Amino acid sequence: MPIEDQSPRPWRSIYESRKTTAAKALKAIRLGKRVFIGSGCGEPQELTRALEEVIPMLADLEILHILSIGKTRYTDARFFEKCRLKSFFVAAASREAVAEGRADYTPINLADVPELFSSGAMPIDVALIQVSPPDRHGFCSLGVAVDIVRAATESAGRVIAQVNPQMPRTLGDSFVHVRDIAAFVEFDEPLLELPPSPPSPIADEIGRNVARIVEDGSTIRVGVGSVPTAVLHAMEDKKHLGVHADMLTDAYLHLVKKGVITNARKTLHPGKIVTSFCLGTRELYDFVHNNPMVAFHPVEYTNNYLVIAENDRMVSINSALEVDLSGQVCADSVGYEIYSGVGGAIDFLRGARYSRGGKAIVVLPSVTWDGERSRIRPFLTEGGGVVTTRGGVQYVVTEYGVAQLQGRSIRERTLALIEIAHPAFREELLKAAHDLNYLRKRVVAARGPMALYPSHLEVVQVFKDNTRVLFRPARATDERSMKEFFYSLPRDESYIRFLSTMKVFPHYDVQRMVHIDYHQVMTIVGVVGELEMERIVAVSQYVLNEEEMTAEIDFAVQPDYGRKGIASFLLHHLVSIAKGKCIRMLKAYITPGNERVFGVFQKLGYVVESSFVDGVHEIRLYTGQLADVCLMEPSD
Image (tube, rainbow, N blue to C red):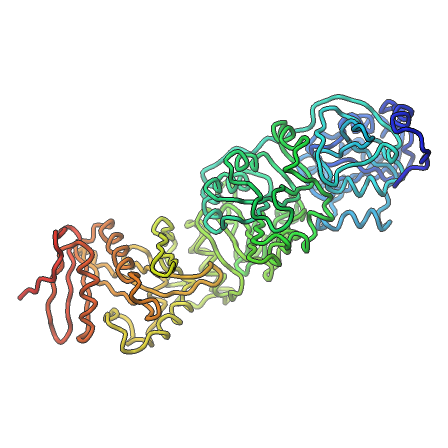
């Protein structure tokens, strides 16, 4: 809140009269007071050190902050009777103290914290902040930590500021006038830094999977850590991404330098990165200094889900610690032990879900770092906090793929999540799912622990009328879509004889087409539409006879998508896969009246033979024999 002295004196005079030392400034702190400390990399280190010196002479202090990345002493056991930390997020500096009960964690969405201060529910007696030197108009910038610091500054009974020439002057809603600060402590020192987490193969693979579902022109927000860093690096082939985030890290700079982040297609604040605080290195601080491309705002603005949703194609990417088979997400604790916090995860998840074309993505490695436990679990570890409910989750991504859960039943979610779990734990998860009555016994029996989804077989092709089709291996979660595909086919369009192991079309068991091992049985589907709304318009399958290394092949295309070249491409893709697996010959059976299908085989470039046996045309395609002109060659 503004301090009492509001005289019309020139600001320089006010500033000079309020300069003091840290020790003198902190004499204003009394017994039982509530003290706020500036956030993260913007923490006023000199003021914090001075506070630690006076704590032994005080009692019953309550200290507030979001998180500290410095080495704090006020959480030491020797200060237990003197002060107590109340943190809105748990980081390495306070994790042990919270676990041992010497400090408190307050679960809260980051956007809701400022209201605690302004409403008087959590009044602040003294706020310790760090600012840039005042400009020629008498305004200091809150620099790399606007977040909840702005609200604390406006609400505190007394504001003490460390004035640091190394604090960047950030633009946006980040300024406070010298008249509103009670004491200035000039102290020049490097800001705290948080270097990017080192990359890892698992994080890189998760990044590539996320990049597959992020569209050009999206506005993005990611967290901090090795996985979020890898996600950003994986997007270097995207175009015109924008940023609306609570936290800015060095990883974003990679995309700025590549020309990927331009903010040109943002529907809110076009041309600008919108953020609230930085967790990074000096390179990041130099980038944001006086940079009109970057606008800093308090979290009550950046994290307001209605504001976030004004960005079309808003993509929020949040890390998790565990996900259970029903879709519940734990992101703040390991069992009963608090590991991090809610932070801005729910703020941005809601914003992305309300955004037009937005996507809410949860990312996590499939196993714990020691490899001992699956992070996809039948149920969350006892004591684990549900940060995102079953109804809130949309996409879950591991290094093994993407599970789209929105609108899917528990059974469908279970199958989708097991498909992206680590192979070593899939059999265990299937058995647990059966015990929980999530899956029927025959479904469990159909799946093997090593049935890895071969994402490298995915390919996108654009046909006539700009029809974009994704050809990919079938998944267990395609069961309903596969049924809808076959029910949409006219009975007289079934020109390929489906495998004899299935029931007569269309009343056959589609599970045999989607619960596959991608080796002996391979099913390729052609789908249109976004992941959450995709529709199957073409299907092909082969079943391998391993003794002879031959396979029977079937395919069908929805009539509305005929005569576009889809059938030819689909068959060509399946034949290429079969050839890659050393299958020497493919057989297909065509009913009379559908001889027009011969032309599809003729275009493939391999030697093809045909014969008419028992009222059915048999086609044999030899993958090892190329033909200059591929004609049907009837045999005796």
